[in-house]
Length: 254
Ligand code: BTN
Image 1 (tube, helix red, strand yellow):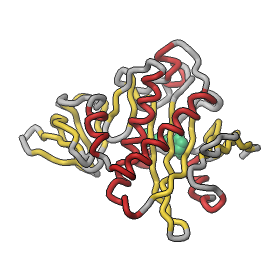
Image 2 (cartoon, rainbow, N blue to C red):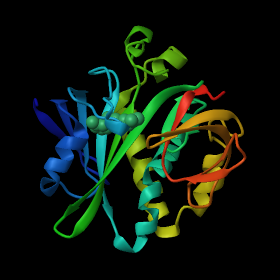
Image 3 (spheres, rainbow, N blue to C red):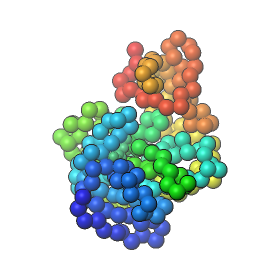
């Protein structure tokens, strides 16, 4: 696992590891040892996990892989499902400040030029009657073209897009503080204010795509984002679906 050290930060502690299997798995297993709003950051992950049981590939010492422990209040349970979407928007705002033009691939992937630069994995855990979101973030920061080519879907990094090495120590603090502040905003005020903001960045809006929802696949058109963050999608047959979760294909539908 390697040594870990504590980065002093006025608002949130960050524990940095050299190597870990998965920051999400580690934080879930050791949740009792960490205070709310702690981040577990590892330079390398040996078994990084993605959504749908996929693996998450990142380059040790070049990219960012970390998990934030967010306490969840039962009174805002209806917004728990929107955490990853709002976190994706928070990260996309930080990347905009660095001049990266991003799109949000519903529900929560971040793309640059139609290639994935960031993925999020949120797992809800209960500990002593308190619920927490373990929010895992994988951001391709400085990986090279060759390193990105081993990923089994179109992928990019901030370095590949800009030709400039990005300082991870500065970026991670900006991302964590933005994610924590926007997720607090979500819990206090709900999702509605985020809808129009996310919509302006929604990838492939009004384009024909294939969506996989569980074992079913549909070809059709993305119509809109609903007020609760679900996706309004029109099948080629004309039927309109409001999707709670699903995976939009990188390839255009037929
Ligand atoms: C996805 O796009 O499928 C989600 C990828 C999430 C990857 C991050 S990296 C840090 C954290 N630890 C993991 O094992 N996964 C998440």
